[in-house]
Length: 40
Image (cartoon, rainbow, N blue to C red; front, side, top):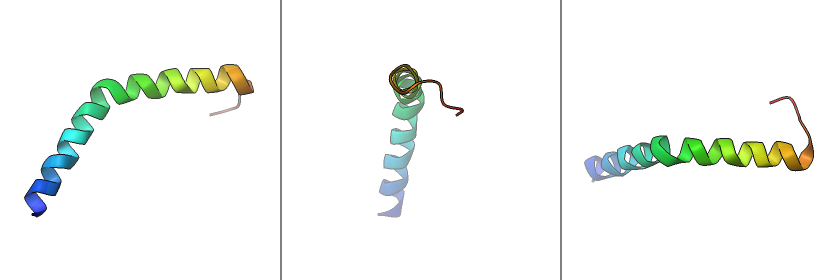
């Protein structure tokens, strides 16, 4: 059971490292564009 949970965590981190970082940067730029340039 614990091994399966670790598999899901690794798979989630794999997807997040491929697409999540780009989405985070895009959403961060949209956030700065809408609410001004706050110090991050």
